[in-house]
Each structure stands twice: as structure tokens, then as C-alpha cells.
Image (tube, rainbow, N blue to C red):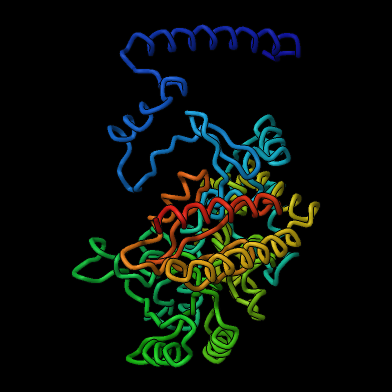
Length: 453
């Protein structure tokens, strides 16, 4: 029989009531089935949080004995009430600092609307963020995922498919020694550091198809290209960081990157730039490769892209932008409304608040301060290098590593992070102020004095 509006409403109400009753029964059954509810944050205050980590969290990180409770701007507060000036920012991730009002508002509003739908449908937030990324670079199209490693995996797959389309069956991607491209298996294979490969190979080999050159060494790059184009192999791509972060804060040389561009053009290969750490304004330009005067075919982003909300992106132009077709690559969460709302909030904040100018000014201030400290303590500190608000200073004192300085800085209420084997890294939020940079330098000097006494 036909159900009119009133009948439909009545039927729906009846079903809803039945559903509610069934849900209540399910909840009651679950509660009596022996399931243990999650611990509250109050229960995890103090040492209890660290105890639970020891019991239940895999030990993939060496953690400092701090339990973070809250943050605001450039500062973090622990559960025991101590405040720290944060020059780690989630390792170059919290670009807008902590508890940024605009980012919080955007994420809250999106959660109250729709936070996730499948990529089987059109997502306006994803379209808007892709458009912003392309309008502010040489890219034409974007692919979204959830992290830097995934962004680089997407680039690696893209390079292999592009090479396959050219008839190359043994594609080689050249990366640099001391690089870091992520922890997933192919991204880890692309990482030119043997220590990260230990225990993850097959018969002594990682994923095939990668070769390495010395960073900023043109002759080494040319030798790698010669190997990559011999014995039936073909050059698929050259994949580089514009500034090596985990390798010790080493900026790229303009001539080296220009040669990489020339080699890729000559071999119809892709120049791929890993912007995961240095991108989204940290260098003083929106993208690190803009410091080098080159235009990549592909570049990747994550970390600061969502201001701390997980999101990654792989941008491409030219043939690379149309290499993937439906089914070639995908991500369940990639580009969902929530993550893209966060990315749009970060993008809007960068535009509205002239963040790049602040990065340039505060970067110069930080560099000058670190150079002054290096000159004042020449037996402890060495070369200062970096771009913008991605700065590092060498720790050269005999018998002392960067971890020692980082530990002493923590005692002074300053959070820092090592990079490479002997560098202390400064990666504060991009909204850090002039007075906060001065405070960071003052606390760092106290740490230097402490370790030298």
C-alpha cells in the first residue's frame, strides 16, 4: 500500500524507537560482557601515562620523560605544570603553533558538518585545497593521502608508472645519501642511510630500483645516472630534499639542483622534490625548491600542511599530472573533509597573516643569534646552517652529542631536537615572535653553559 507523509513519519518513528531500544540492549550487553572501558586522561596523569606506554605501546620511539597536557601558541605545558618553549613544533608540523583559534574553529565546524566521506564522491574541501596548492606552485594536479611517507610512496609509484609508459622495465630512482623519505618500505629504500635499512631487507637487499649519489655533488650524481642507464635499466626519476633535514640540516646547492633538472629533461625522467619537512613556508618561501630556482615535475608535502592534523599531498605537473588513472593509486582517508578543512585553515592563515615575512625575519634573527653563540663558544658549537625557521647548529665538543645539548635545553624549558649525527635542530612554529626567539636563544645559552661546566 502507498504510504503518505504521515504514515512514513509514523513508520520512521517506530523504527527509530525500536532502533534505540535495540541500541540500549546492545550497550547493556556490551557493558556486561567484560569489556574494559578506556582510561580517562585524569587517570593517565603523571607517571601512570609512562607506565601504560611501557606496557601497551610498541617501543618505536626513544621518548623524553615529559607528558604533554596542553599547548598555546609557541608553548607546551606538561601534566606537572611545567611550561616549555617549543622549538620542535611536532618536528616541523605545528606551523601555527598550538591551539590556534582559526585551525580549531575550522576543524570543529567540519566535525559538526561531515568529517569523512569516500573519494568515490566529490569533496569541496579537497577541491579547494588542491586548487590552492596548484595556484601557489607550478603544479597542475594534487593527490591526497595522510603522511609524508605516503606522499613519497605515491611519488615513487608515479615515477615507476611514468617510466613503464615509456617502455622502461627496470626503472631506477636516484636519491641522495643521508636523505630521509619515510618509514614505509619503498620510502625507506629511497632513504640513503644504511642504518635505517638494517633488518628490513630481503637477502640483503631493500626494494630494488634505487641508487644513491652524494648530496650536492654533481660528479656523484652523474655517475649514478650512468649506472641507472646501463645494463637495460632506465632513469625513472631523481628524488631529492631541497634541504636535508634528518641528514643534518644541509641546504641544497643551486648548481646541483639545476644539473638534476637538466639530467631529468635529457632523459625524459621526473625531478621529484620531497618538501615534507621544509615545505609550507618553513624556508621563508612557500616551497623549498623555490630557494633553488628550479621547477620540479613532482613534489610532496605533509607535516605543516594540516598544522598537526594528519594529511599528505603529492603534486605534479605536465605528463606526471596525468600519469595516474582510476585504480592506479588511492587512499581511504586521503583528502577527506576534516583533513582538508585543516589544510585550508593553515593556507588561509598563511595568506592572511603574512606568515612568510615572519619566517624570513625570525629566521634571520635565529641565524644571527646562533652564529653569535657559535662564535662565543667555539669549542662547543660549530657551523650554523639552514633556511628560515629550519636551522641547525653543529655540536663539536669532544665526547658530547646533540642529545646532550637537547637534554640540558629541556631543563631550561626549551624543546629542541637532534638532526643527523651532530646537529641541534630548531624548528619552531612559524608564528613564533621576536621576543620568543630571544628567549629561545637565552635558554639555549644556559644549556651550553651547563654542559660545558
